[in-house]
Length: 107
Image (cartoon, rainbow, N blue to C red):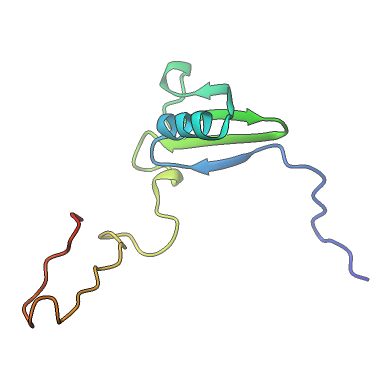
């Protein structure tokens, strides 16, 4: 039998890096019933990040967004930096009779 090299006994919180912590906190409060527990940001002297801590039962989420360009929360999660990694719209050759098609939705 193998032994666990990192026996985790409990998790205090999960921190999520989000683009807009205030909006994400509102979403989790209204959509999932989380209650606000703490805030850290410019008003509290934190010039690096804005964080909202939400609780629901034993679940504790820390939603953090960067206030400056050099914070790790500002970096992309995966892939190289650059233009949007949104997939290109698929076009049917039959719909435009061989001419380039325009996407149906605005990018």
